[in-house]
Length: 504
Image: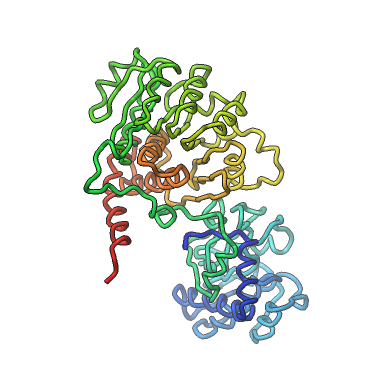
């Protein structure tokens, strides 16, 4: 259930199901009943208002109204638009509703105990205006529970954008699969609790649709996650290198190194400028330290193929020296993670970075920008009118750069050049703390060192990062993250081993 379907893909899922012999109205009936069943668990014996619109989402609302009559004291439909213009399955649903239908007005919501939002579905792609906007504002002001049908009205299902104004639902019931707008901000903030209802669309339609967007979680990458084997040893688990900054900025590199070690790399080395060697050596126990000054010495270090993953950027400084270090790393066969200063150093010449990435003989590359770094490095994307969402920004950046792009945030997106993308929804707000991104960069390198592919390694590290932060809880600082990882690994490994066990 980790596939996320765009509005076009969901429409295709409906079409294929109908073509396979399931009447469209039967899908609408099941959708409306699923919404009503959810309402049954929230409120009984009070007045319910269904705010319905002129499309199939409104049709779902008419079915829900008919179904909730079995437990509600009073059910009314407040209709936005001209009911006589309904067509197809929505018209049939409206005809079968025998209760009152009022021309929508805010005062109709007064005194109700529950509102069912069936105004617009996930396919909304225009600004909400007129009476629809008035009703959405009235729904938000009503102060009662709101169940949204498919997606809160006013949210674009593919981008998660608010189309001028949007319902703030307490519950959302969607069908078959979630949409990107359920996970992307700000859409996710409008959904409340989210349930996915089975309305009879078979999973087989996914073979034809071939979705490329996924919710980030173990189901996406578990089959390729490196589980230590009894016969394995530290050299079999890879050797990650973290390039440290100078004397005044060694902390970021040490955080990344500890993240790589906790993620499972067999060995981790900090490549340290000689001026910072004493502090890096004094502050590191399991992490080794090697003196490395400049690109030429880094190239010599990475010529040893046993050192198979490298992180550059955390605390490394912005400028020509960093650009040379990055190009030296990209000229090696190690997998490369570029974070922070390594990205900003190419802001005035991103094409040089992208050319170096695309000319690599082997070794994956992961870029880990936050919004500011992204905008500096991928400034040209702002000029592309078809790029409307964080998801498409990350996808476009991955295609342009030839690297896996991890665009950070509460809804972190990981995108690969081949179009695959994963959206995370497990990051707690207290993960927004100084140094957390350095730990994440190190965790990605730790998984890359264990020969996990770049898209899977970045996706898995993002999920583990969020889970570790949630496990620690409020008061989290970056130093806490690596030490919270083992508990997440114990849970994850137990689940992965159980999945792999033969069934009797």
